[in-house]
Length: 248
Image (cartoon, rainbow, N blue to C red; front, side, top):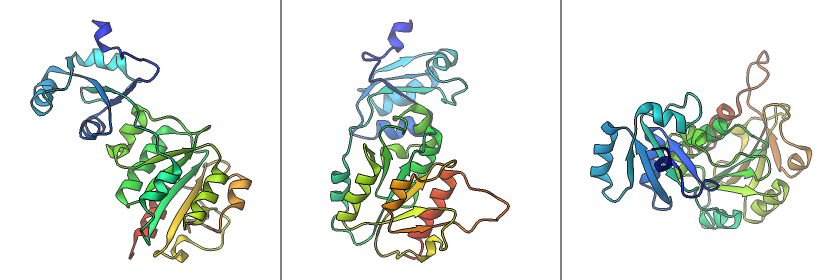
């Protein structure tokens, strides 16, 4: 029984879980699907909607064993391949003819659930894409997709070897770079909402690294209560993306 749950290629296997993440992946033509493991009550629905989909039925406890501890899967586990890579040049080409665009850049943000929540905010507020550091950022995962609530299929994610070099490429493609810094004098409301912006978010602990900050054209901060040291990076990202989208 166990073998039918295993991926043909365990090294490249990705297991998405939860209704939003699974259904968004099934609707994405770029996503290569291997099979859906689901409870019997879910199987009837998906066999009807996706007649060519390989479906394996299983008890909830069996699905539990396929996933991280206490994963909220709603009786669905989708075995699939990670999305194809996209380069920064390709992302810039997508917005080449746009006068207004936002790309979020994460410097050493390592928590997959935070990144998933940030992806969700990118989708909600129309960001063109997300750039992460290849070395320190987690790979696409079920936890990330679950936190993104299906929007992992909508937001292009670029994995850059060198973030400083990535910011230089963004500048050459018409982007201004704003770094989030708790010690900056101005807030994001000062940014020109009719331009192209790459917004850099550092890790909650150390913030942006020095070389990354030196590549920023401007730094801004959120005007939070002085008694609060900082916000969760995903919360801060949502506020900045909203501010850039507001009245634009």
